[in-house]
Length: 165
Image 1 (cartoon, rainbow, N blue to C red):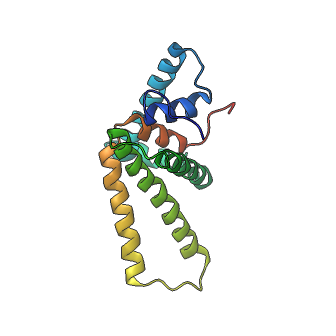
Image 2 (tube, helix red, strand yellow):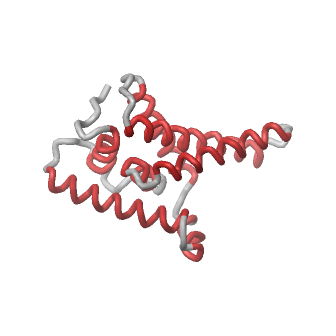
């Protein structure tokens, strides 16, 4: 099992995503973190705030397969972190919110796939309202952590993996 970086869970995920190896020079890591955070802020602002005209264009960049892979990876990273039984801290709170978001994406995507392609499935009002509540709670979690570097790194991974990784 991989050790969590000294800077906490957020730094661990950013280092792993942007660099793969934590031995890179700190200047390069700092620049990459800043670039990643800036990109995450830009995507979040377009996707969730004030740019409705660009939102439709941005949506075309997301591919369900890449988003599923990113969410599976994110959930796996958080599960590994949670198995270490970390003490209560802001990183733990953020990780729990992020786990809810990634898990909800995967559940909702599977339910959508079932609704689109499995005509034998019967949906009850309870099924639908339960899924709506899950998604609503995921958006509440997002609002809690959207400014965190870990959340923004996850947002970027929804677009796919960087070239060369």
